[in-house]
Length: 376
Image (tube, rainbow, N blue to C red; front, side, top):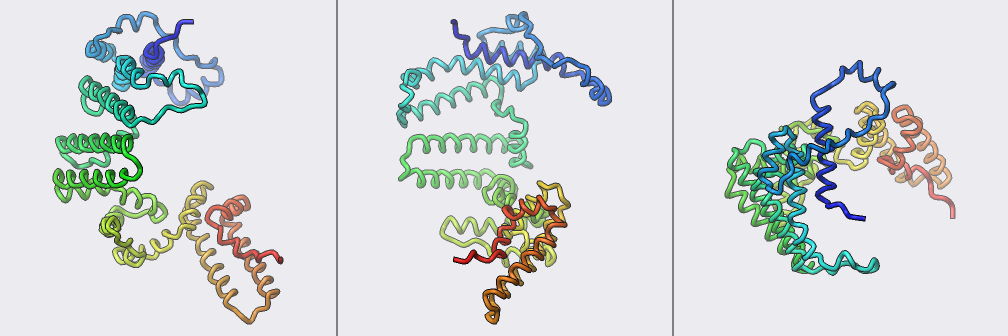
């Protein structure tokens, strides 16, 4: 049986999607009609591809193909996808030469990791992306809306010329990073990657003003990314995030040279007194776990604070129980059982019976200390 070209398969799928867009893209049923209609409509089937569409558009001249697609009203992301599929077909022969022998490789063997082939493959992909940029303008591969939002957010506030300069710098960094990973042994890879990060940082410092660099770091640095995760339960304001970031970044820069990380007391010092207390609670890993569980259970957010208050009270009393040397083993066991029953009685109304069982494993591991060890 004759094999279909990958381009034909891709373009066929894209054209089906495009035709669906042309048919349905500008028509919307009223919301009330949708509910009534769905009960009686037959199953929806993809629209058939009009056999006359593609022959009227298809050409091996890529710039002309792009112009025809745009003139026909195709959305830009479909224009880009079809152009990329055509380029893939154009580069396929060169890619097969690089990967010669893989198709007939026995199933019990793997392709030899040759650094020269890895590098050549990377260069081929970059050549394809450069051709795509030349045809469609900068960043043509960015057809993911969520990814584009993230990229634009980290370049917020920069002038258009600096936006393009930073994007070019980041592309160059990513390419060189791929080169190092593809061609370096593990013994030298770490040093080369560290040197690359320093080179990129120096370039950013030269390109951006101090204020622009801080805004970029607030959105794109590893420090900011770690803080966004760690401070989820704290829910900082912008001013609080900036204050903690300035402190944290200075320590992170020192850490690369063997420095320290800021203590909770140092972080609390840059916050208002009431928020400092909130911060101390939310950096507790069990509190963060509890907050995530509460969100999944769709309980009020303040439930996390109430559960944590129970945890803090019970654990303090548990500590006192073990510090009391006047208790006999049997007395201590009995009081542990009483304390465990009290904890369960106070937590169940907050979390529900099923929620409490989930909490024991996710945020409430401390409750295991309320069960005395089994006798030997």
